Length: 111
Image 1: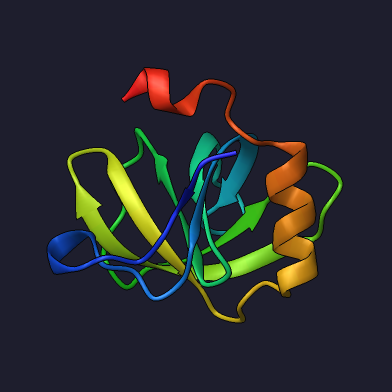
Image 2: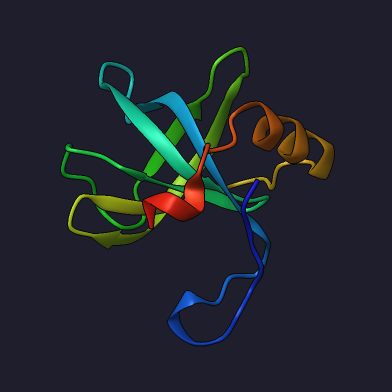
């Protein structure tokens, strides 16, 4: 499993990030549910592409398979790629479990 350790500059993050492939649902409001592929996960947030036009600061709920929803806010946007911050960080044991179940195979070969 590839783990990105915090670095310097624009790629700096507060927590280690895991390369994952999680087919999940973003719920934007009570009626709009968007299927997404989460590709990057940490205790404090996640990254995914989304074809819906969303806005920085907007609140969404992320629902991963067999897990309850996690409220988060959009922190970054670059084209159709969005970075989200969880309102409440994931517990380290939960993060480890999710990352182990959904780790991206051959992550280094895809870069």
